[in-house]
Amino acid sequence: MGSHRLAPYRRSLLALPLLARTARAEESWPSRPVRLVIPFGPGGPIDTVGRMLAEHLRDRLGQPFVIDNRPGAGGSIGIRAVVQSPPDGTAFVLTSSSLASVPALYPNQGLDPRSAMTPVSLVAEVPTAMVVRTDGPYRSVADVVAAAKARPNTLTYGSGGVGSSNHLSGALFASAAGVALEHISYRGAAPAMLALLSGEIDMVFASTVETLPHVRAGRARLLGVATEQRVPSLPDTPAINELVPGYVALNWYAIAAPRGLPPAILARLAGTLAGLRELPEIRSRFAAAGTEPLLTGPEALTRLLESDVPKWQRVVAEAGIRVE
Image (cartoon, rainbow, N blue to C red):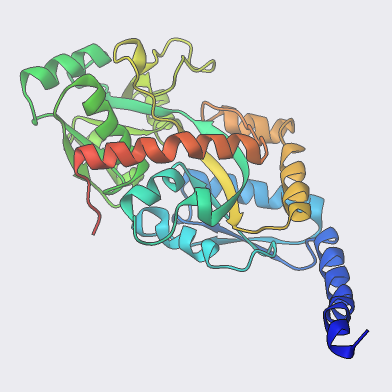
């Protein structure tokens, strides 16, 4: 057999040590610190969850999981940083349901998680709540709908920014209820809550992590949650779709990696996360926010992205939402 015909075999033999080293690296992952990008500022609810998970992952996997806050542009800055990272298990993103709305808001940036990322795990579903002031005129979702129909474009709701998950939740509510609301944008969910409490706006759509402390302190009234059914930890709070059929705006946290993450690394991280689900500390911290840890692995997150990405594309198009 001529030497030119042997060349492909020689190249294959030369590649074997590299393949073996790659396989060993995947099996021994992590062998160096891992970056956990959070596309929001420090101190918020998802940052708190990220730091809690990072501590347990460090203890179980033997390497630091370093929180890297990359806020801005509705989460797209942090998501892009991970999409553009090598798929070697050194960078992951912990983000919210904004992961599913980024393709609609930034259609030309190649940030569709269905094609640009590897789903790792759904972390939790955190209910979106409709909240008003305790001393305000609204005591139910029906009150809000009636007032909005009587006075179109006069009732206001605040969010943490144009294109944020809370903005889109309000836009979806307005569409499903057949009303016109005025959106007021703030630089974060906390300023939006302060605006509600000071009387600047009529309501907010925000996660229970952000709203329940004010409700429990008597400063705000929880009218409903944007889940399919009532939340077990909030049995007296109606699901909004009891009055507005079809209104479901799930707010969730999830971990994803760059596309092409090796299966061995994916399996080890997803399995480790699943092992945290029943820890009393984890469950109690999530329960305080009106939810529970899911830590499901990649399949549930993949299904959620397949349904939520087109849903938010429709909402953004129908509401004419544009980000600058």
